[in-house]
Length: 331
Image (cartoon, rainbow, N blue to C red):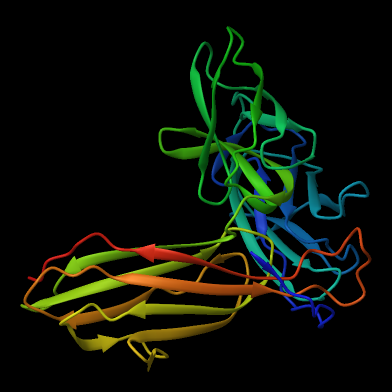
């Protein structure tokens, strides 16, 4: 990682992103005054952010909505007059700094006699990669193994063993590869998330941007197609993301996604800004009579925000990573 000396450019404006929720979407809940907790990766404007709970008949169910005074990234919605039925929680949140907004919804069902869904509590709320976390869970299956993951890419964290009441209390360390940002901790059962919590990873592992490079035969005879997926796993707002796919030896380009330009012996795409999450996949197809390997080199950068002080400034940097494919033969 190369630190950049020039630093006080204006910050890039991005909307908040939902990182975790309790309960998870499509959950069956008991009929009670449930409090829904939505955790976003940026501080919210409490005066401009709102949410409402809509019933199946499009009526609005009474609820109170508030941005937490302790953590301004958390929006709480409490049902006031719960009754059985299917509902949809709609939310509209506005970032306190950029004033950009994002919207979303979360369906759920209230049904009498339903047990409370699983819950995970995490302490401390802020940690570094390698630090120890205390994880407390309840409402899980009794005497069961519950895999816990962390981050957007669900890195393995620990397997929790519940007791006879469906609880666990254990410690785990934040994996070295988890990057900077508000990171989701999930319980996984039968391929779906059953509970979510968050921890703020203050500096984290490297790189914040990851890529995969997958080759497939075809689509036509004598062709190989490579797909490069790029994703920002962090709360850094990355810019000038440069993806350079080297031309394999003795291969001819048939087609490539728009925006790619040949520079020397590489096909290069530029992504001006990449907020948290994936970019659109990039594809390039070659004509060849032999097995190919694709090598993609990626460069990305982050600049410091204007007006931040020494303690709150995130570092400016220019960094890079690579993504190589497996050998792929033409059709």
